[in-house]
Length: 195
Image (cartoon, rainbow, N blue to C red; front, side, top):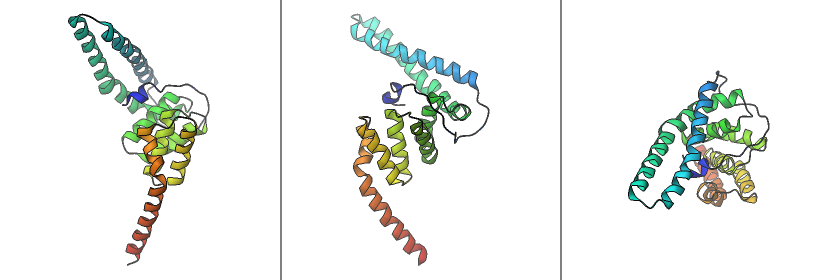
């Protein structure tokens, strides 16, 4: 879970055709976990500010301890639960962009680039063009060797000022080279298969 994602929650409306399973989602668990995420994400910046202004070592230690516990809860419990539930929630409600973005991230982190690209394309198609969606979707297409689509998505992110240099930016810089490399690789594979 990156800090970029933590601060990239933007609302918009639209509709898509879900690509994930049609299983019945546990909406109560989703809402409960999402509420806990909100509490944690609101509290962490408060703790950072309090830590900077605390003058007593004991106060700083207490703040650091709470911060660490919340961070660990988020990384160890909250985000994994959201990632587990997100695909089904998004499939049931394609306007639930929080679930869509979480499913996108989850697929990407699990190297499920086909699924990440499909969800990302759906989100983009309905106008959900956040920095995280644009960058992950572009990189997912790159990983699938769909270099024209990767270039298109990443150039659009760049044009909108949303290209993240360490995520999509480094792939945009190399997309044309990798397209040539992949074409050469395919030719080698075809010759080997024919031999």
